[in-house]
Each structure stands twice: as C-alpha cells, then as structure tokens.
Image (tube, rainbow, N blue to C red; front, top):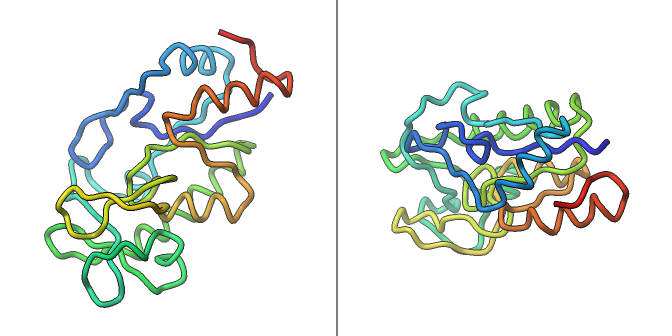
Length: 176
C-alpha cells in the first residue's frame, strides 16, 4: 500500500503560522486514505520547534528583498533566505525542517506527499514573493525541494483527485 505524507494542517490540526488548520475540499478522499492507513501527517515547522502561532515567513532573495526569481531550492543551496515578517532570518530552521521531513517520509515509506501550497516550506506550485504583501509567484518551498530531490512526488492539496487517480490506476486505492 502506498503511504502518503500529508501536511498536518490539511488533516485539521491547527499548526499553521496563524494557529489555524487548512482543511481542503477533498475530505472524502482524505478520510478514505486515513481509514486505509495510508496517511502520515507531519508539520516541518512544528517538528523543528517553531511555535504555533508564529510570525509569517517568506523566501527572500540574496539582496534582502522579495523577488520572483528565488524559491525553496535556492534556500537549500544558500542563494536565498527565509525571513519572518518581524525580520528574523529562519533559513537554517527551514533547511533543517526540509531534511527532517525527507527522513521522516523515508522512514514511513512515503513515495507521495500532499502539501499545503504557498508555504515557504511546503509550496509546490507557488510561494509568496517575499514582500509580505500577499503576492504570490510560481515556485516551491524548501521541504518540497528536498522531497523532490529524494524522488518523493509532491502534490498540492488541490491535486488530491489526480493523486487518487494515480493510486487507483496502480491498484493501490479504492475509488470514492
């Protein structure tokens, strides 16, 4: 059976930066996967000791300003940073969270991950642009970059039906 790493906030846990959860529309599929024992919930920020709630964080280019050309992959190689809106550089903690998440996913046999899009850690199609103005840009978070490097397929929460179809085609899931 395919195991799936899933953002803890998508499971209803109030671990987001603002102390809320982010339940998604695919609750029937998530409930089925949970009943099948495939889901492994995780929050990288909480796992490395960030409090909940915590200041919002975004990826910032090397010049210290927001830019559309940097994302989590750049943070992992040191050409971009993650800052909280209060000015704290939290890059090293995000890097540690990324690699801890890969180790966790491998320990649990996860080959797929369903992650909260937009997060500086979990973004898989977009991240916030580093200006703390709510603007988004195409890009990935630090944990997504590390998971992809480890050959774990990352899916944003809005792509749960697509992942379910892949699992059904492979014979690893029951249709809803």
